Length: 358
Length: 276
Picture 1: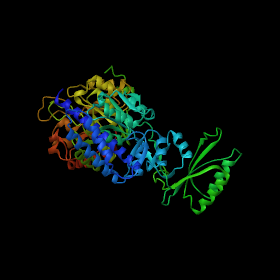
Picture 2: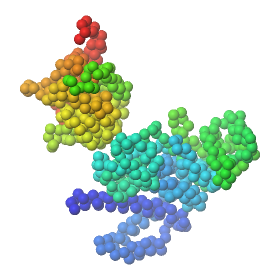
Picture 3: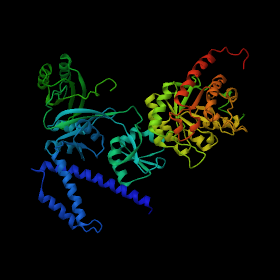
Picture 4: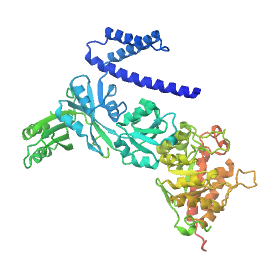
């Protein structure tokens, strides 16, 4: 092994170590929700004792102790900061995290395996806020999320439209000319199909865009690249070979910010869900109320009712607060015409969302 | 010239190549910028300066074919990204040289036009590779090449399915030592007889002398060239390559002030009575 190879391996280990510490800090912040106070001396002693039982000849006891104590001190400092825990689905660097960072700039971003973990965590109070995608401008509604919105009791307190700008990422030491395979979520691969063909790259499906970036960094693959967000480049120490490699006009995903408590400011946009009895003209009766009151609808979507096949839930977004004078009256009438009526919440509209060409 | 099926004058109407808002072959295009991309500051400063003086496109080398392997080889893809950014910021399409067939598709991702340098004019595998992209190609004349050899190289690109080739005369080697090369201006009217492809002039490399750039640029306009490609550096003394032949932004501005009126004058010149 040459000095250069050795250094290269050391750099990889350092990067891997930092990514793991980041994950550990996230877990420490989550653990705080289960504890009365930050300090837990029994647990700390337990951690140090457990490490003491490991027999690593080059990592000696005093050093191990010092290292772990430093990490514990830092995680306690973070716990005291009282950052809000913002849950998103996917690995660190997913577009959900991009949305979370926009919606809650100083939060602690917690990756979750599934959408249901985001909803459950917020409902049960282990996580403060959740960020979930509701629709993509090209792919349509995210049915799993819309389903969870109808069945759980969370409030929508914000929204953000995130442009999906795919980047081709590779490890810093790799040569772009050597790249043969590109890992990413099948949807991202499909959106970059002609880019991949032009450059004779083989698409390899992976479970997640950010997961592909993480794997690339961990395995240090030289002849491979990943398609993921720009955020992933910084998180996993990858270089951006090209940004904006999607073929079509760029698409965007609308994310909603969820909380156990309603938005306490003056929101200017409202989301509701309802179903209508299976009778002629029922949906028309509801929509007529909005038209006559001059309330501008910004989204209307339907989704099959899981509990009652053949019937549908309707998702309606409109401008204005649900307690505003002209709106409250309309909603009262809508409630009487529909079943399973539910106000998801009123919240500030993302300025970029409904703008022309926005 | 019997082998020219696609490049020959008789085979097509005059080629007009759209690049951004430009139509190369119809508009007189001035391409300016540094010999090589050295830094963000250098690229941005030079790009803004040439734009202000009325350049139509931005040039800059990221992959440099240098005479010596120990000379600065260019910043590679990172340099190309700087050029791309500078072009976007100033509303200028960009052109850069590609020297390695493996780089062609990647350079085509960023550059509006691909340049084949004089040393690579007969690098047939490279010509085939750029012939397979959808980007226009600027093919420089080999420094020892005849017009026929040059047009055959254009034919290589055309035959791969890429119809957009621009020829660039950059001087040929003669026994003259005072100038770096001898600018063959007669190539312009000669090529107009031989081919339908646009022809532009590189007055920088052909003369290698700062004082000759302006006169030869004006002569190129008079000879009927479709454009110029000129080296401009915001601080030529510190340039990492071709330091003594790059125009300063002030000199470039002076050049532009004289080129545009001449160009307008040439357009209004009565056409010759006999069919030429």
